Image (tube, rainbow over all chains, first blue to last red; front, side, top):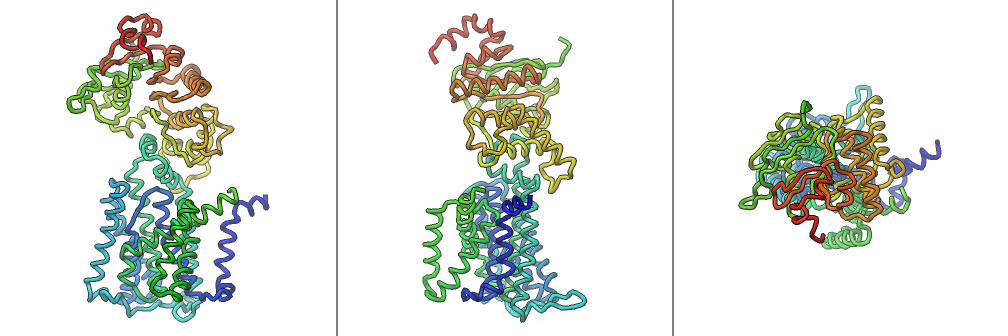
Length: 319
Length: 252
């Protein structure tokens, strides 16, 4: 019983053991804790995106919009409303999530390329708004002038502004709760209808599943989680970047997901590790051409491991 | 004549532009009956099925289920009224296991598809119902295999199991043995017979394989060029001259 429990849950156990001990082993590889925070933020964004691509079978090419709205919502709240980190995150998550929910209404009847195109268009609209609305958003320079507020626990305050390790564990906590919530959704009867839609939309429809409603809901859920990742990104950098709203960012989310393994729950986390590591190490060596290296790695992974790195590992292990 | 027919079609016509795919077809299917709809390729059989299941509305005519008109009810609503359907090309969830395929169908049938969680009683209900349809389809031993990896016959059985999971009172099977070898045809035919004889389902099926049709059906309707050519018992149909000319006499 105990042994089978270990074997069945080997993957999450290893992953959590590694994530919880990051501050101890990452410096050995020349990394720094903020890098691990970036990994978690991108992983959460890509895992949220993967609920659509990997589990509902729908390709959104504009997830940067919700990521960016989450970041701006969080930053604007901290700057103009109130210096509370949790409330700012809530504001960012609601902004991106509600925008995605409303926009999703226009999307649910589109499929394939048309779906992807409309999502790109909405992302670009958000980018131009952030770009043009100088007074509020800081325009091209991005939103600055806000800082993470300490987490007030009543008895004590956790200083996530100056203590990098505390910030990492704060992000890890949010990541963990969000990942658990996503796992919960995916294992629910509703989550199984997402798989049904991915596998065979016609069959699902003739079972009596209202397809449009379910696609809309899964899009909405995905956008809320993506916006949460965006709000963490604003906290991590004390900065919200209009570039983070463009299709380039959307493309990064897609690449992270596919490299790590869509259809695999933890796939995007592995993809994010690879992506952030490449971004950090390669860009310091070749500042102008690092994207080319990422491209080569991406193409290689797609060619040789069509199910992504995690998908391949899972097949090897026979689980 | 006191019983209400399970399914009744009154003067159904379906036109696509100038093409009349189904022309003035009427049909009455009694509860517990196994009706086969046969006809050469392009006779309008699948169009006829699509009218019954609500894939599109008829140009004219009326469709009644249990004596009530269902013309205005869309496909999903007809599923809720008890119509289960399988397709000419097997429609399943290939990268999920047999159990998951059955479970999704059961949960949808029970109205759980928007639930975020199930309590223990509901979970048990779902598990029991999934086991039941897998047993009916003889798939229990393959419950944890991916449906996409199974043989054609087993895939078809899985599809029928999913239709059964919705607790239909009327089963519509579009060419259940299409593209199958003898052994698989035998397997699926056996399943359909069990459903008809033992579980008393009302079944309407489209079929090309004449051995299957004459073996299974209580009554046969013959469509040709969208029109109803003949209707009757297998013996009557076999003896019908028009049918022989239009269909049976010709080499397949």
